[in-house]
Length: 383
Image (cartoon, rainbow, N blue to C red; front, side, top):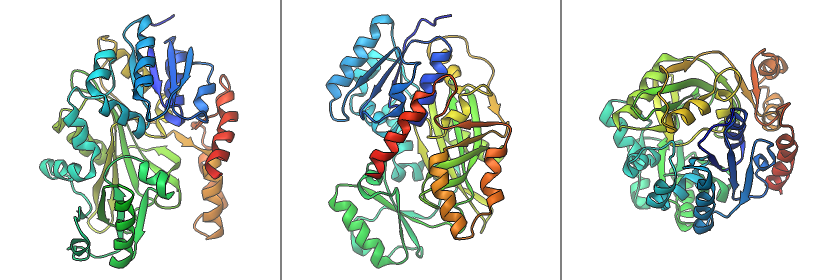
């Protein structure tokens, strides 16, 4: 049965592909827009239309959104930070054309996306954070009130990761921190400096939530990174849904305190020193591993679509089944490194793949071409 409101998925990597599949399988007409021809989701059979634009060509992206409105007011799902950046740049125009899984107030989005502002929001509602500073010069950086090692992160977005090849720079002392801080500033990136929580790389937890138009958390998923790449400070290679009540409570407390609506991922690190979950960041979009919540086990995409379409919402749901999301290509690379360093046993490496319930990052029996196209995407990144 066809659904009346069209959907536009802007960005067609892992989460965008999962959105397109979940909505397409439900009978929604889905238009896909990508800014890179190697976005493998462009090959999905569940796209009724597919278009290429560029990250800089806002006018073409707006035009494609207007075209999609021919079948009714569309619901726009931006996938990655760069897709959200387009929405933020053209906020009023996009909101006039489409509904989105984002709050109505631009400042609400910025208060969570920017790490410098997020720290203030966390303090306001009583959430713990790693020691963090926003130095304005090298003297200030060299006189921080917490010791190294330091993590240097972009204030917002993934552009710094694309420029330098890693999303976080680890500095063992003030000299190396200052050197990278200068390089990042010369490239135009705003950064924050944060303490490194010891042994936290295996204890990174996330809440992925959809907050409905009425302010209720209609769908929630909590889990942790099992393996990530690059090692210790990368994106998920394996993610496991795993209930943790404190992560659920703390994440929802933050989102509800600012009146958030839509998709959000709230990430925490468990600190063994004081047994606290420390807030790391908030992404105002689906995470890379969102497909674990858009499957036959649970469908946050459909919950969001129905709510944004104006349908009466169902009762809030928290998905607790221990389902694994696996990105085999990345995990093979990460796992090999960990096996060589004796940080991982062969049995531990295979454990996620032996689970009865798992979701592959790109492969689907009813939609095989994106998995094939993802190999071209990987080659483009390696090149």
